[in-house]
Structure formats: structure tokens, C-alpha cells
Image (cartoon, rainbow, N blue to C red; front, top):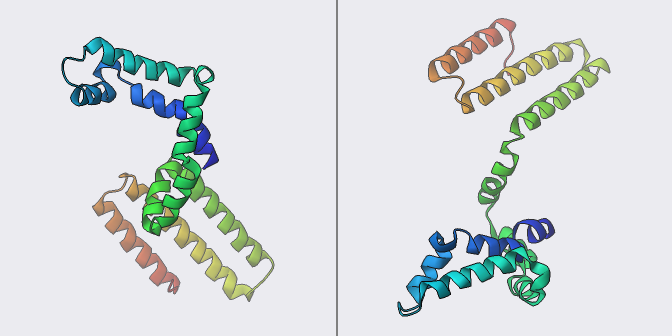
Length: 179
């Protein structure tokens, strides 16, 4: 809440967004619809300009900014609304934030998981059969993760996915594994 309240949904940012577009913006259009036509366009333009000025100079209009901060209570409002979101909607809300770093998260997760598996194998947990099984699982997970990533980014088409799945099934069958 604090980050959003200070940097994204601050009174200055909200006022700037409100006044964006000037005489072609939504605020001007809204004011034109609300006020009768005898009100001159210059008055509406002055109102939009005044809001833009208040946004760009918060120190000159501290009462306005404080009033907005208290009235909107961004932190409490966001906290309340986010708690009411179903888990799927919350995930959809956060996904764009992490989308840029998604490949990094996938790779780091795979490397850490592989390292943990290799460490367990190196410690001899489960004996020699577990080592072979761990390597098969590691290979399987690496291939399926790469396939999922490439298909979700449109690099692999349906034919390539089908061929890859068939090849993976043959490989697993020939190794006697049933992952």
C-alpha cells in the first residue's frame, strides 16, 4: 500500500492523470457535458490547467493534497479490496508485474531445484537407483519446462509439440521409467 500510495496513486499522480490531455482530455469533455454551454470554453480550460498546476506543484497546494490523501485512504482501500479478491483474480493482478522476469524466475527455480536434487544425490540419499531416477526426473523436468515455455511464447507449434511429446514418451519407455 505504501509504495502505491506514494508513487503511483499519490494525489499528484491522480491529479496529473485527471488533467492529462488538456482541452482534448477526458476531464475537459466531462466538464463540457456537465456545465451548460453558456459557460465559456476558456473557463473549462482554466479549470483543467489549474488541476494540472496543482498536480505539478504539491508544495503550493498542501491542503488539496492532504485532503485527497485522507479522503481516498489508498492504503486501507487497497488492503480491503485485495483481501476480497479471489485467488485467481489476485494471480491475474500480479502476473503482469512478474511477466517481464518470468523466464528468470523459471530458470532460477530450475537451477535451484536441480542443485537440491544433485546435492541429495551426492549425499547418497536413496542409493544408486535413486540417483538414476533423479537424473531421469531432472532431464524430464528440464525438457517439459523448456517445452512449456517455448509453446507459451509461440515458438513451438502444435506439430512440434506433438513430435516432442512422442519423442519424450519413447525415451521414457526405453529407459524403463514411469514418471
